[in-house]
Image (cartoon, rainbow, N blue to C red; front, side):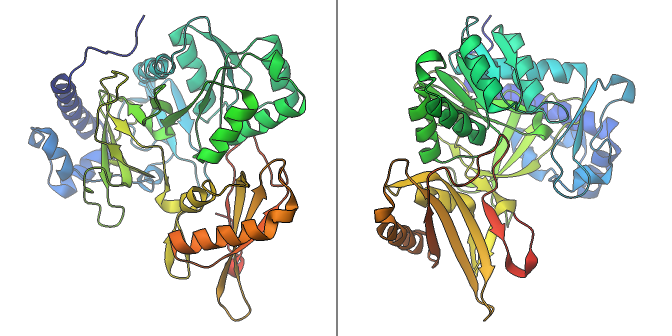
Length: 432
């Protein structure tokens, strides 16, 4: 059964979006005290939404709003209709909890099934799931989507490398789903154990954290896969599965019949120029339990204004370039870790793993030290030249001075979870 409606045209898509927007605004106004108060303060009533252009007049919702009505923020249905809750990882304070109706669960599974179809899977594929289960949406999302699609799910979660290697061989896994950090760890384990001739993985689906082209290339090389796909999603938007890049990898197709994506300047909160990067703001079109109206994701991306030759009728957004709340200030310059990542991935001779350490000299002047691995098999004899090249590139591209320390390949930590890149030691600040 096809899950992607390839016969959908642009006019039909806009009609679906308008009806979904009108339904959502009416639904939350009638059933959520939070949204009713928000709309009343802005002088907006549901009947004011007559076209898609009226979306810009609706108030924005931010992550802080999800803490105001804890433990059921944005709840827009009766408690008896809630069949499940999920929560995002709370680094400070309470977690962001979202509630789901049975329809929400069904819609999410179908959207995720679209992702597997977009990646070219068939019902003969065997999908090994290496992301977390429980309150986190990832594991259950990958599994439910796989079962809805009709492929075989192998739900290990973030188990140890030994178990994953064993199942890759014994189950003849063809698709591996994980964070980029976990995929790199497994690729290196497979290479170390000389298991490549024994495994049948041809496709990898990565989610939960952004990754560089260098990391992507290294995983692909060590595991010998045909394709590595990016999947997008947040707990607030059901979970992972809101879109995936096709086999042409021109960008991520997002399901615009279920979401409206806006790109806003994170400071002025006004629309950016078409094709320009900014903060992704999302409105859900049929979510019942915890709907979102103009939710600030804080993810940085851009809409790609061109049709994809693959024939999918859904628009594209770029891979996630970073997060507005991951930005750090160094010597009066606003920097995203992704900018450092972008520079490093274009320097020959260094690997994909790096750390950024921010320190303060006794004089009070800030100092940035970038630790980066040399490429596998490279001699340390070239370290001084490599460091100088990275320093020059950072100075040229980001306009700041830094120190660079080249370290042995494999010496920086690998993890089954999201990897930490920035460590701010200034004034005893906690790591970013």
